[in-house]
Structures are given as C-alpha cells and as structure tokens.
Length: 486
Image (cartoon, rainbow, N blue to C red; front, side):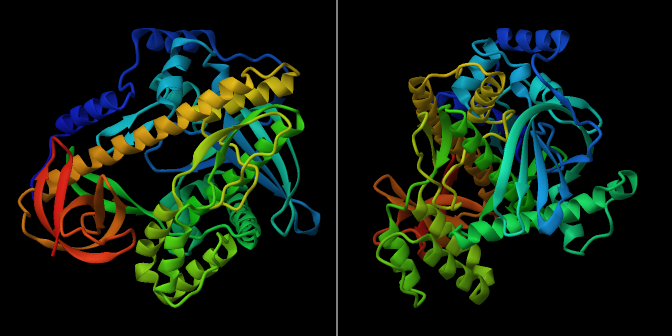
C-alpha cells in the first residue's frame, strides 16, 4: 500500500480552502494581535466569581488542545442534580472588530482535515491562552443549571467565573472505564472526588437523554473517518465511532445550549440559534421504513421515526450505521438562524429541542463567540452588541462557511483516500448510496472508510440503496474516486 507525503496533503488542503473562500493562514496583524493579547491579559471587568475550588474536568479527544468547556456537578434532594458547564471566555482576549475577530468572522469555524487542523483562532489563543488547560486558571462563562430526576431543567443562570481544570480526560479511556472494560483512570487516584463526578455525570446525561427521547430525539449511529498515520505517513482511514463518553458530553452541552438560548430570550436579547427543519424528504424516509415492514405517518413525526430506528438497532446492529447514514442524509443539514428579541425560533428536529443556541465551543465556532458576547452584554446590563440584521447576516454566512468547511474536509479526505486506493483499480466493494442528485451519485465503502462517485450504472439509485461497486479510477490531486456499479 503506498504511503503519502503529508506535505502534499497539506497543500491540497490549502488550495481547497482558498477555492471555497476560507483563509488557510492568519494575516500578520492577527498574529501580532494574539501576541499583544498574551502581554496585556484578559479583560476582567464586572463581577467574576471564584470557582477554582470546584472539581472541574474536561473530556475530549486525546490530542485536543483547544479545550472549550469544563463541567462539575453536585447531587440535590429528590434525585435532582446541579450541573455547571464552564465555557472558555474567548471574548476576554478576542476584541470585536480586530484582526483575529475578522479572520474568525470569515472562516467561522476551525477546519479539521486529514492534513491537520486549520484553527479559527491563532494557536497562541485557541490552544493556549483561551484553552481550559489542566492546571491553568482561566476565565469562563458558566451556565449553572438544576436538572430534575426526569431530565427537565427546572432552573438556570449564567455568570462569569474563574475556573481551574483539575483533570484533562479522553473520550475513549473514560468510555472504556464507564463500560467496565478498562481499569480505573490514573487521574481518579490523583484528583479527590473525580470518580464520583464521572459517575454522577454519566447518570445525569442518561436522564437528560431520556427526557429528549420522550420528545422524539433521534438515536442514530454515525461513523466518521479518522486518518491513521505511522511515522508521519498516512496508512489508513478507520471509523471514528461514538461512545458513551462522547454521548455524555453531547447531552450536557445540549442542556447548556438550551439554557443559554432561554437566558437571552428572558433578557429580551436577539440570538443565534441552531435549527433543523422537519425533513423535506420525509417521503423517502417513509419508503425506507416501508422496506423494513414499518409504516410511518405521512407527515414528519420524530417519535415514530425514533421508534423505527430503535427497533432496527436491535434487529440489525451491524447494519444500523448504514441505516443511520441514510436517515441523516434524508434529514438534511442544520443551519444557523437569527431569532429576534421576543420572537419564537424554530426548533431542532433531530435533537427534539425548541431552544438551541451554539455556545459551548467559542475557540472553534464563530456563532459561539457571538453568543458569548451577547451573554456578557446581557450580564453587564448593556445593549446587544449585534443588531438583529447583523445576526441575520452572520447566521447566513456561518451556514455557508460551515458547508464550505465540510466540503474541504471531504475533499482532503478523498485525496487521502485516493492515495490509499492507488493500485487497487478493478477491486469490488460493498457500498451504500450517500448522495443522489443531478450533480452525481455518491457511495460510501467501509474499508477504507471513504466516499466516491458512481460514474457508470448509477441510474435509479437513491440514498440508502446498497450495492456492489468496482473501483475504476483515482486522482488524488483532484480528489476523485470513481466507481462503477458491479
């Protein structure tokens, strides 16, 4: 199997970003501004609580350096739980209208490619000064919630605080320990109370998830490709699957994002929301379920769809990821939307929540930084720093750039995959259709995990169909992987 020079892959990523209106490099002014922020230090105006004494911890990928959030919890009477989520106060070091803010406002997101990460903020900030590193005192915006035993959020408040990360944990090792498949984490002996925190968090996440499930939150299993390198060379693309710890953090962040949206609404502020409309291709989802002997309602119904998904997970666990992929494709993409003060925003069909504002990753997403500035203005008693029209324009741009970033990530991943497939022309693979549109029909194969285009024999294929395909050509420079129906 051929090996790929990471420098070539990096250049492909750079050109892909430029072609889609994304900036792969920071202007000198932005880097100078970040260095100046290091010298000056963060803004500390207003009331800031000292919560460094709490047992804060983070869970993220093993190699993640841009840590956005910490959490801590305490049990309350009658099965209730107090949950605090601390979000890095990025705004304290990134001034609106500056060069760093300008770069972030153009790209709107960090771009995670097989060639490496193109961060939204200079690394001096995102992986250092504004990252919630273990053992470092940091400023944060805290979302403080009371969760009842049934998973409802009965009370919440938002405030600024200083925090201290006691333990940087990783998804895979935490998940294995929670599942009883690995020995105790070394941090448990070093940090008093951490084991109780993890078990309390795990139970709380289950309650929050159960509440959303009762409202029709969709339980899907999605698989992303993770590049595997050996000695600096790309050697494989393997599935990066969800696990118990990833679900735990996702459930807590959904709760925090909902509380954030409600806080801004209660303050009479406009906000940016993450929304997912009812699926436009519901008829195709109905047909997919009918193929498994299940009749879904004629109109979109999240409870009925989730019931179908749960039944299929039990009946065919090996094929559930492919079924999930088909459903996710038919649901369509989420988008950002501005909600004006006093207005009711659209909900999120997949998460089964009505109020949802991205707020917990300001190092990586511009909407979260915008939301943080709105929160801090509301806390200070100031006017909203963005007009309703400005938020509408930001929402549209962030949706566009998120789509562009996803296309860059897919293009670079396909370039990497094309190198891995070089020399395998003529081989056949099991595949599932992931896209069917006038611009082309696309399929995904499992080993290596990648997508390609069907250039012959695609007539009549639709999303979710399974078939055998034959590899007919690859071109890494153009990120082409072409199959024909076998």
